[in-house]
Amino acid sequence: MKKKLLIALAMCMALGTACGKEEAEEEKVLRSVEVMTVGESEIASQFAYTGKAAASREVSIVPTVPGKVTDFNFDVGDKVGQGAVLFTVDTIDLNNSLRAAEAGYNVAKLARDNAKNTYENNKLLYEEEIISKAEYDQIKYAYEAAEAQLASTQVQLDTLKKSISDCSVTSPLTGVVTQRNVEIGGFASAAAPAYVVMDLSKIKVEVSVSETVLNTIKIGDKVDVTMTAVSELPLEGTVSTVSPAAGQTGMYTVKIELDNKDGIMKAGMMAEVEFTAEKAEDTIVLPRNSVITKDDETYVYVVKGGVAKKVNVELGIEAADTIEITKGLKNGDDVITKGQTYVSDGEEVNVINADAAETKEKTDKKEEKGE
Image: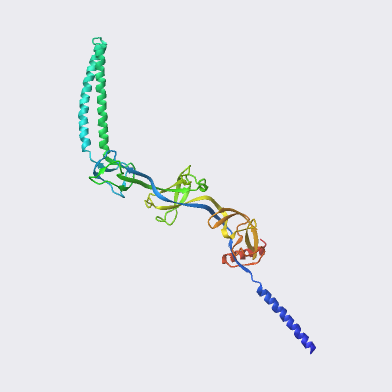
């Protein structure tokens, strides 16, 4: 009887030990993490500023000769070529003045011709000492006065002819009419622009940038310009002007030029310009939150053979959500991107994202081959 009790006790103890082991094994749960396999990528540090689109050239046109408008040839939205007549003002008074000036010119020319003949004839007499010097000087003076009067009349004629020509007001550039402020029968003068013409074949966007960005911008740089009213994709612009001095707000003016041959961009549209301060290609880039900075150390966790290893890294360019790793990692490393704040160096982990599992499997196979 005693022997049976000992056997039963031994069996219970064996069973209890086995159950304890099973419970201990069940209690060992690996922490789940997600990883990213490191590969070569590119990164850029960018700054965005907002501005408005404007014409590359804009001219307000006023008549040099004020007067009543007799005709106009273009309206808002019309394309005009350089030298095209936009409108005309009345020339009746100017034409009357021109006819009077022409008559005066003819009289002055006749007087000059007579004075010239008299001068030339008396010059010979003076040289032969037939007339006195006083008489000769008087004749010479009369001739010079007649010559000056003719020249003065000629200036009046030229001025009137130019004024009449200016009554046909032309466009100084090829572009699009954006304003027409004249009507037939109305009065046009220099007090207000009669027409506004813009050259929209090129668009310029003016933005104000801070001093921290200014020295990273150079004339000729290519930049991305986003105009949501035109395209969801960025357009390419070129930096055309960089102000060497700050304005009253302490910001610096930068102008960007865009080609607009198809005319889809309009003056006044809002535009966002992105400047690239730094850029790197074929480099290692990680999500910013996968990098841990603690106790004067900057590090990440790399999974190898199912174990998290702490790896110190050096940082490079910082972008919005990503950061460059310049030292510490190599292509093919599996870096923990989720759950990294809870693991410790040397801890076994469970990789749950599919891509990482494939990478881990490849790594394990390499290790088995001794690579």
